[in-house]
Length: 233
Length: 222
Image (tube, rainbow over all chains, first blue to last red; front, side):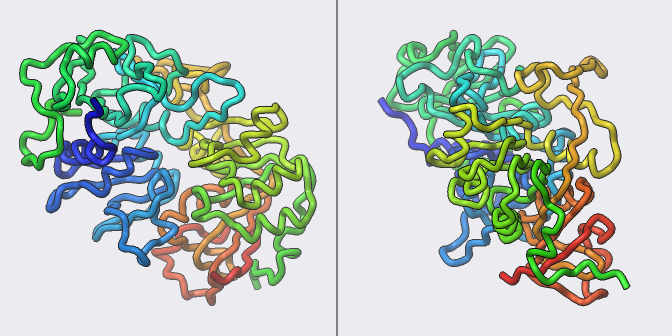
């Protein structure tokens, strides 16, 4: 049981972003979403240093060191892109002008609490970046992460044990094994990977899961813009 | 005649001293004034407080300054390197450097407040988290906000694409980042530009940083 590759997790999330949405992509797995926005769909990708209208990674030789994502990997500017200062960028973020922030995480709790900046260790360097601003300001937060820690410990919990980035902010989680919505009733599995069953998924999760009656296969598939989201921010 | 252009790093950096708070523009290495920083290293100044979005990549002048034990404190949003460990991690782990971790947007806004003469602001960012510990909070329309103070430096080191002798600046893409925010938030603002242009060459509609915020401009050709 392995579930989706990192690329496929990014691909599924990219397919779920509705046309016209303004989306910030965090470091790591979320940054890969920029490469998989379905052709013909206009999505405004934002990066917090002050770029709006980002496109996929450039062709070799076309890199601009000043057009990068949060994780400093090269991206491109699409026609219609704009550049602005850090102040305006976080005005955009804090002011609720970002529809979705796609972030990585250490842990997510069933009430939507997010922990992704510190493990609480005083000797390990923390790193918050723009995560707390995004957690507080984005209309919704999608988390993309492996279902479990490297040692097998669950990342989806009834309560986060690491210091919080934001309270009750995560609305949806894409792991290698499933797509899970955070609802007032807790975690609801909306899609599940083909090589795992619900009972096994539950054993890998630190909180009670509910299975959506409309649960479907969790894999990349081009979808139409109309049926993209079950939760509107 | 107003002429903020200087010809040498020595002239550009004159007045920087031990104990100064340095605001350093950039997002990682994009928009970072690398030559000005190298000049600061050569000055030999110590007990510095560095305010920057990132601490160090591990192989930059920031790392050299830390390795030489000339940095007492870092104020930044992301001190971790994207891969591997750096001199910052080692100094932090052994308690030899002070870290003030500030959410990225709060850092930008604290600097903006410093430049704008604003005495602080309330933000929802970090409410209810460890980074709000000890800070004043207020319920505004039922939501918890955290009070954040302005941040100013002794010196700001910034990087721009073009500048003129009045100190007007334009930037390139994401290298703009916090550079225009830091201009004005320090007693002494020093800009390195890729290209020095004649007065009037920059379209007034396109100038991002009006010259009044800048004290010195030095050309560092790319």
